[in-house]
Image 1 (tube, helix red, strand yellow):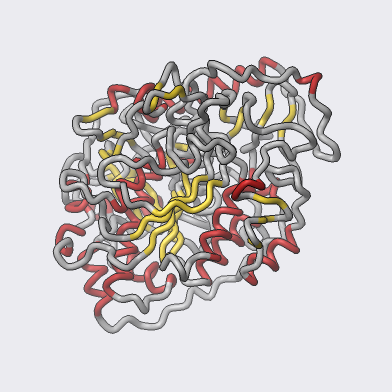
Image 2: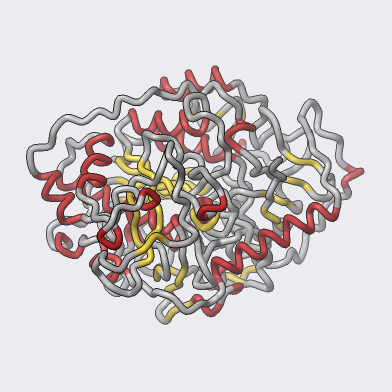
Length: 533
């Protein structure tokens, strides 16, 4: 029996709440006594005792350190990455121009090279706070964004001219529920045409093993896929410890990306699958791999990751980390180049081309590495040639399963009230009717005037107090799912955000732009601090 792994999230400061990568211990807004709050009505709850919470914190702390503590290993700059996947061969021809790439993560900060990002709605727990709305204070989303579209000359993304559309789902402390991620995906699908979104990068994942044929999260990504959006998902950072790929990478329709260790060279002859990269099983392996060890990209000064893992910082506002999250971001940039080369490509064709042109690691087939390392120049040649029709022909998900099944063991928990968000309720406490939502998502009507599942998620109508009278904001949370194992970090492929689940642990007196960041969660899997999902 699996116990619930949760990401510890500290209370958000009233003055400023940042993503799980840039937070410090809360200096204000003490938690409301549990007995002062009404018990959630009709919402299943699980009691957690102090020993359980401490055990969860210990596991997540270890995961975060594994991801971000300095270590002797490969270091790969964006120039090295381009040579490893051979995108440098087409850099003077293709830059991703005209292609929108959506990134659902912890937000993106306006750092050098990422000043022209399009910000979609903030569906995270930070949304009510103007100071951090859409801003990445954790550091994960910005790191991935740099790999995709940074236009700074010394840290150029794979597709620097692509339009990056950021949808923030992970809070300052990394707390997130699968319902928020599903809502974010639905928003991306709804706005795909006006923003030219053709690629969606999800460095998020849970350990849910519900059959993709009915899983709501699987249905969400498949809906995006059927609407012409190439979905790239992190395979997960739990290595062989977990038999399955992270959800939604385990869905057979999408492109599941594992992480490779390039060992400091640009050829694949000595490359190996990173030990934390989930190899999957006979039923579902990653489709391809991309560099995922020692990846150097944009840093958010003063963020949780920057303050907690200073050894991961590199000169010039850069940061080093590891994880399948980074690998997924790189693959997302590669997909954008293919679509620029041939805008008529369908998601199925993009997947077939990327897997059909990949190179086996070490010159030998390894199921855990899928088809092997991305090979962009060969993929572009294939995209520009006579591309055969390709239809995966897989069964479509009905989405009629359960939210709880999508969550797996990744839950938001209120240690003070000893309550865990479980069952068929979204983050606002609204009952979730999977069949009704699936039909609306398929029809493109799940979002209506800023409302999703009957509640306002954007604008002034967003309120953080809908769960049975409890507030999910301004309190302390144990969550689990932003590479906190849920962000394919090793869940954000950081373990979940390659961390394990945004479980970062403590932001320690951090200040960003003169403000205090409050938070506590994000087990990144490696910010040269070790790994970043």
